[in-house]
Length: 254
Ligand SMILES: Nc1ncnc2c1ncn2[C@@H]1O[C@H](COP(=O)(O)OP(=O)(O)OP(=O)(O)O)[C@@H](O)[C@H]1O
Ligand SMILES: [Mg+2]
Image: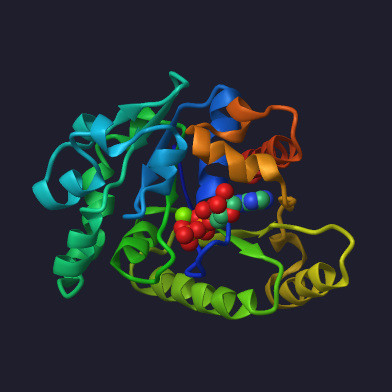
């Protein structure tokens, strides 16, 4: 069975895209067949793989709005076993025109069902909202991981995310599980980071905290070159941390 995973948090700039790009690349480097789906109209995951609008004729909005087949909307990346369904701004049209239509929430899950069997992992990046595209993603996946900065203000976003996950689990997707919280922009040995992590463990359990991702300049530079950190700077804390995290995610269900 393929694993369906999303990295989601309604808080902006929490590391969702960086985590999507680099965990999917790490798993592809380990030999797994990966499909990444960019559900964010900002298209940062798409850009981070070096794919720009002029390279794309069809994207996720073509699947959701025009009922194009997902095979026809899948593009190649620098690794043969790592494919991408890109995003464009047109996803905003889906968000705008379909939000009031209840049936639209399950479109994503229905329309990609024909291709999931061709992959080991389907990994979705979500926008920093709790609206239709994020809801559709949580209805589609089985595992959600929340990347979050270890700041007190991030805790409010976490609580909202957890409530949404439970709601979707109850109403739409009994398979959905919150599998982990990923501390991002992590500063080791600061009391604040430790306090936040202790607080999360108290509320969500000891094992919920995943391998932290330290602040690392290579992670911030790599998207500018359209490259995952493993391609841009293999010898970096960023590459090391994301490889460890990917290993942990891989072993999670074994
Ligand atoms: N560990 C890190 N160290 C340094 N810079 C990072 C790190 N993680 C992410 N960044 C940078 O911080 C910014 C925000 O990260 P990212 O885009 O992954 O967050 P996001 O949650 O996807 O944002 P959005 O909510 O806008 O989609 C980006 O410029 C990214 O390159
Ligand atoms: Mg993002």
